[in-house]
Length: 331
Image (tube, rainbow, N blue to C red; front, side, top):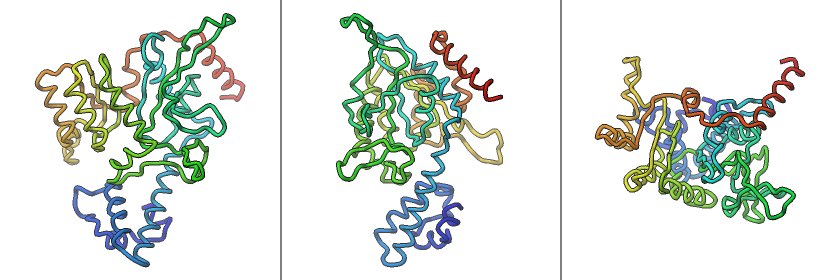
């Protein structure tokens, strides 16, 4: 275990101090449950025991930060870029595509740069960039020589990071959330059972409010990819919207939905095991055509999404420039 190597602590020692039921199959491999027990253990232990648990939490959270900070300047995010190309290029008469993610990483930010998209993510266009939900209400237009003429530009989408981001940092002097590349103190909702409470604090409550509003709009489609419906603060609003919004269409894609092909693994599939997904599967079995469950990965799903718009002149130009740079670099 990486945390053991980093902190020098023995895992069994932490289990003993926190009373974590490691032999219970329900908790096997559950980092969220472990950190939840550790958080409680800090409150009920004293002295050296409390210090040991606190160090374990700190080291584990640092490892999580390091693991999700995996992108370099030249790393490609082709699948994310292709997703944006297929869902973010919409008619200017329609509302902007909204992407809600619980991931801390910068994949969509890199994909936006790669495809020359504009991500409206709640941050100002100042230095330093600061978060304010009012920026989600802004849009971007292109003005020509005529000051009375303007057009909404294409390739714009809204990005909501429901659990924070590795480049968010809280300025303790101003109490503002700033974008700081490489920060050692990112604003994140770490995996533990307090996620529900934290999700309704700033700045996350602004994201949650936007999410709940979006899925209650008429003629809305919700594409859910790689979310296991284990976070009640997200799963319950989705189920509530399914119940109340007759015009909501929901497609859920996850590689663990179906039973494992290997019977020795004894995996019945999350569509049966998870209570929220079980309700959705039941509605589908009763003929609810608004809902779909797809057993597959993000990489498998994206190429199957409708490609209803041809490459724009700008996208073709950017693709040629990337190929030229690759040729110049001998790739």
